[in-house]
Length: 239
Image (tube, rainbow, N blue to C red; front, side, top):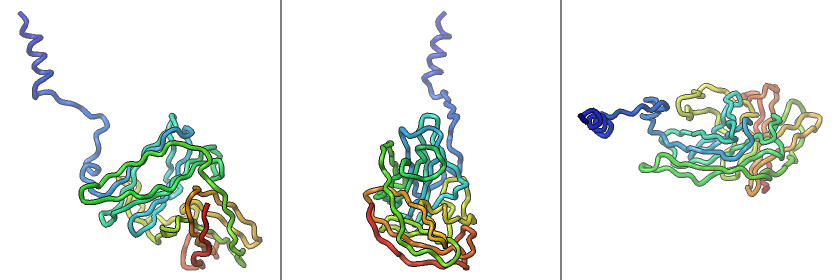
């Protein structure tokens, strides 16, 4: 009389049970053995831009501005950065447009995160950043104005390099940035000085010592190329 409930219970508990994961990772993700940093933002303004710049063991990288990152409707964001297998460490600068005005200013959020290492047994590390106010300080360059064109100054923690000439395919699955040419503005955060000495201020995470490297964009095309004049490190300052 009671065989149906017994069989159903056995089927529910037995080896024949199957589960369906609607968000299962792709084969390329499962087979990806590159070092990876997974970072999570918590408690930020909803639906605002996130920008990223990062360093592996021996190279600097930046996300192109057209690769848009945004917090979700709850003000959170989770992303990942993958590096090739020659890397044993990673650090990154992250900015969030907290006031949602489309420019980087002192009301926004910024942080430099470092000290993440990889090994043969640790290929994935995680980092969580909770929102806090007043993370950015103001710096104005003392660089002289160029005779022509626009001088763009790029800032990086003094332990990191300013930029690399090329990019690796360092983000899982998308986008493939190996042939992407970066604009100066992608190496955030930058400042500019024109030939009339007009200078834009820079807003950077506090508590860090920075180097400033300036490039004169002689043809004013917004890119680093053969016609430009690259200066050395012209400043070392703390915020």
